[in-house]
Length: 281
Image (cartoon, rainbow, N blue to C red):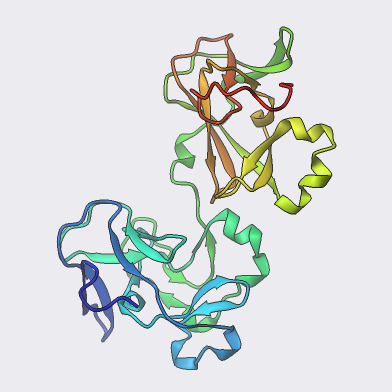
């Protein structure tokens, strides 16, 4: 367990007799400022006076924080996020003395769909939020699915059409100019667990799957145009997996003219020239 002073934080008064965490020095984005540590128990064994601090890990496994991480407060516009290893990491630069916050009511789409029945809300967790953020929810009283940060700036698939690619069947083409680094499609996916692969592999879906998961152990079918982009070892686009949001982003590697076919390297890395181990559709 982390000892006092291991992280660049201070426990400070936070009004109404509460305490919170603040930065002990100026911190850049990506700084590890705390880590949740403590015993793990089922919900029925969570003491009543610990219920407000208990952190759901998965299923019916709840962590009871025993270190300074328990004092981190909520904000509807937080400056930190909770990583998969339970570390608390800054999402922007934070000045010395500034409060360190996370969202208590935030779920990713992947977390919710993985175990929708696990995310009940206990009334003891509810409170009136006073974070002052422009989009403050006012009353924290339920879980909310977190929106992808750039969603409002992305108009997915508005510059695309399906067409015939010579010698390759269907393909995806630009209907208007696409600029380098532009996200031109934000495609949702349907994920299949690794245990289902033996059923998928003998079918035609085999040719349209993406490897998925933190270790690429699962598969996913991309919706929209996602599974219809043709392969090239000199692609004009790349795909980026957004695991938490169950999305694939397609991004232009260079300026693409209207009428040009959009291609990706099925080997994942645009520069990977390794021969494909399956026949390209």
